[in-house]
Length: 110
Image (cartoon, rainbow, N blue to C red; front, top):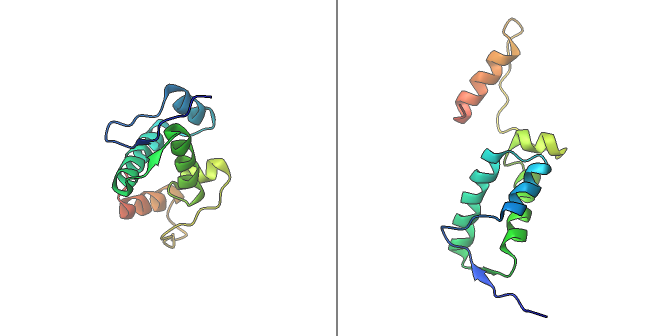
């Protein structure tokens, strides 16, 4: 049996094509995968941990990001509970989309 070498996560880490395909098939958006790839690199590069299976570690990172509510849309899509940071009261005479736009503006989302 061939033993895998443990590797450090570096700035140029990219999950394998199979890993990305697997995540997309599970319903994760490209934008979410890329944002979390950057977070994964920053965190593990700083920690200095070595991985024998970095793609598996990345898949787990993505699943945990949703589990802990880092992306409300993804969490809702995957059936996880998510918590809103701030939910303003929407006046009865305004549309729901106007309230959502105001909320996204407060959160700094486009």
